[in-house]
Length: 252
Ligand SMILES: NC(=O)c1ccc[n+]([C@@H]2O[C@H](COP(=O)([O-])OP(=O)(O)OC[C@H]3O[C@@H](n4cnc5c(N)ncnc54)[C@H](O)[C@@H]3O)[C@@H](O)[C@H]2O)c1
Image (cartoon, helix red, strand yellow):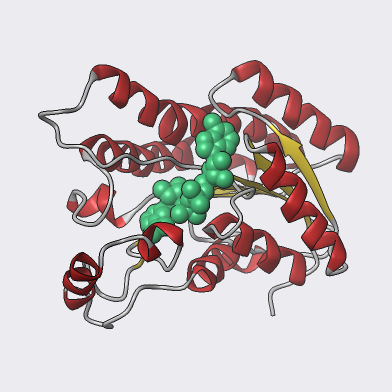
């Protein structure tokens, strides 16, 4: 078991009731971390924090809109006020939309990028300043198999482009912040067993499954396991890397 005792871990988009972020938050908490659940969804934050408190975990909720710099800066300042440090940032918040390029508007493109890339940039920038002062930090970004192979399951080309942008951002950042003891890595999940998958029509679901060598979707826990490793002290010489978690559906 990797030990996160006394570490402060911020997970964005962790207010989703059955999303990947909730499992990530629980996994860090089980391993001793103080977890900050950040989301734009107040009810989701309240429910997930209450659930974690009920399980005896240390968790704090914060409602913030990642696309708004003021909101992000206030949140990061509040976390530092409460805990004094931030050891791990998991950039999990993300949005998608199923639309063809032919039907896509510029506003669609801006909306997807505003969360998946610009929001990720804003919180990463703010948290990096805290981590630099500590001379320690671990950042893990949720990219996607779509960012590498160009969609194929959910979402449109704007989603794929935003997730590919995250890969480049993380690598460039790695060159800048390694000198401060900060690592930055990505995970690229394939199809994961979340609500969106369960809502897919059976015929489409069967076709997707047929394209996965392991013959099943991944579980949120399988994504969280890789993230926790990348965020651990043990992953000290890994930065600018990306880990595929896709059951073999894309290999490079
Ligand atoms: N589910 C999958 O199969 C899959 C596959 C590959 C990658 N991913 C990525 O993993 C991450 C989590 O996916 P999920 O399926 O659990 O998503 P989800 O929709 O269940 O959760 C995303 C959360 O992000 C929050 N959010 C959205 N905009 C926000 C904003 N402006 N500020 C703060 N929070 C905001 C939402 O409120 C939501 O709670 C996403 O980045 C997604 O792109 C998911």
